[in-house]
Length: 471
Image 1 (cartoon, rainbow, N blue to C red):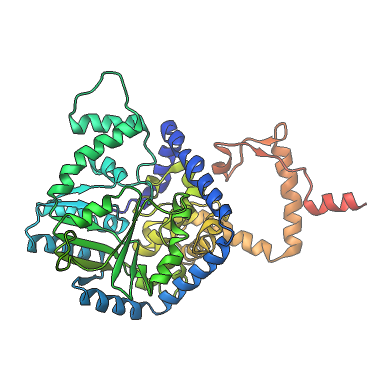
Image 2: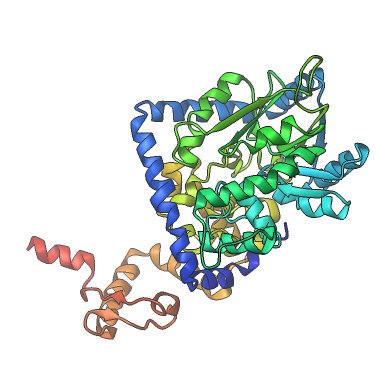
């Protein structure tokens, strides 16, 4: 997927002006946020489970090479082929080679964010392979000229029922009742009918992998639609693609984290479908693939080990941080310009594709701390965003007026007497500039007052007001 993060400000401005999008994004707070709060409250031992899950993820990452080698041995022993890719492009080429080896012309695919990194659909279509997305949200985006997902869990959350129906009308060419938009169950039934023949004709099923289990050589898949079952049981070839950081040592580790993932992602106690797949179809088994491949992608992940951003490797892609982020709730995922949006995306994108291409993403946060509070893996996202800001400043990547302003502020802040004098002067000037207690225009800081009025200060500093009150 092409990186467009350098256009964040322009994209965000367009999304803020899109009233239809603003209405659609309200689903985040009315569905995911409230649902998560309810199921977390119902689980009395949630914090204890959370602490244990964090401990287990840390332990897995501390010996990542050991568990990856163990996974490869166990998966190979059970008949699967394990392949390694240093870059997303290499991973896409491996999938193309597998398709050519098995003379695949039709493939079905489940939702996979790693495959978005790889631009996998484009690579397969260039090789003559017809790819069908089978997650309903991803399918809707695919028939909309390959639009990228705007959310890692709910990829089409930015569209409403009417928009989706128009895509169905344009694509499916079925008889319609004029002037009537069907209800959602009718539309899902229509999509199911269209996809059924694609499932049955598929020669290769492509999935992501929520987790890998080292002790058994298995991949765990979590969905709410059951499409992963048809993608892995019907085709003769199954390719599972995931990042190297997703490996867990044992089934017990998996069970612990699965108590957190659906609760944090969609506010469910458990997802509708959970598959644990180990190896190709064995002798006497009636379904499953004849050939099974695992493609483990680095894509910059191992570069985070031992560094300031290693904690991001604990991320289980639940989407809770973006559901609760006041910035994401207003601009949606496409503004961020790459695969991963929201707070976690701001850190991952900057880490994987470089700070030079993501200058505005570390700034795209209010630092309210909600993302840290709700993260099931306790990733300190505000702290990581601050570290990215520090690196930008150190490398001179921020605009010179901003750098100059911060240096001046730093100079003043280290000199208390000067700071107090300028603070007394500043509050009086701001009070003088106000109109009916509001500041409507602020020179050198128009970004604050172009779209909002600021309340004027009292004309005295806090220390002065406190001293008067004591007297």
